[in-house]
Length: 396
Image (cartoon, rainbow, N blue to C red; front, side, top):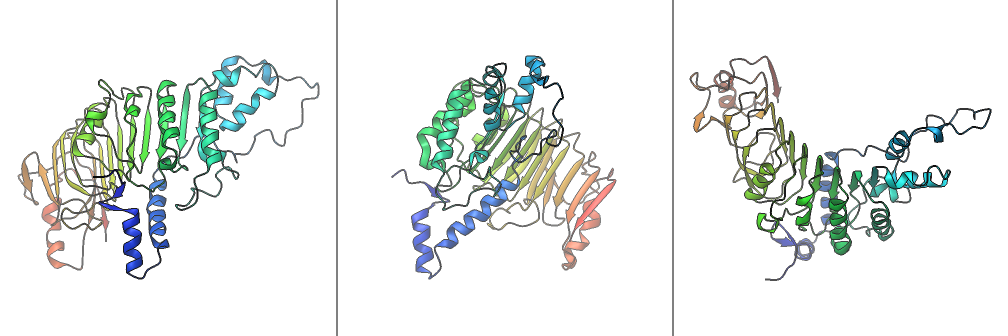
């Protein structure tokens, strides 16, 4: 079997051939992919710096005596100033005066590849089908090589990683070695299931990690002893992953508080065991089932547009099987569809009975199909599962 990259078992070339045989415009493939990628970008955190941010001193008059008082500030403050600038502007501070020259190399750097585009990323993410910007790739490699680290924040979102596999692997090695703390790492398809370098799992400095359009490596490929001891926020957007890979991430992230899974490409079983997680958000994702086994700090569980097992369709309701075991602090739950979703306490399935309840939930969001009489009839019994409910949101 060759190493051809595929999406859900169909290669890009085969998909294009199928579209042409149906007499449709091949451009529809990139159009659809761009729409999916657009949704993924919507869930990515914004960079902490912007090349278009206004300067607070832009309209201020110059100091009468011409004394450079900013350069007299302590090194610690100057490094903090530099770390709040886009990478290109941070590097330019070395030209201000000899006082500033060594500071850039010792300040935590924020590197955003879209800021290296000619328009500074003002036009938004590049569309699929456009050539990957070789100049940006080169600039990223130069910046990573020139700065000794650490990197406080790195966003790579505008490169087609398959075209730059060598550089991509080197970037990951460099970021791991130089202690990146906040990383957003997105592969612009195609291929849409490019495998993420396993060395990233050795990055113990990460506090926030968002991955987009990757296949997570198998656990056997991850370096022994790898973990994310400081990771508090994890986002997986348009990812291919196995059950074990997802469980592995949770096991190796002992302080993780927020988990986002959006547009998962393959169905996986989510068996939640985490003593630190406080919020779980799922959307546009196919999951076989969800089981909250042991999550004593979990407070919020959100499910929107999650695919039902066996249908392959995205609907507003949650998966048909949700088991809530050890989640004594769960306060917010949604969206649930009464009559269709099986909500379980441990191993007991309940459907609105008085004996089986979720006592901790105070805020509930449900999806009610008012046009279906039988669905409406199930709502009162379903609500009795939540005796401490204070706020109810109804999606129609």
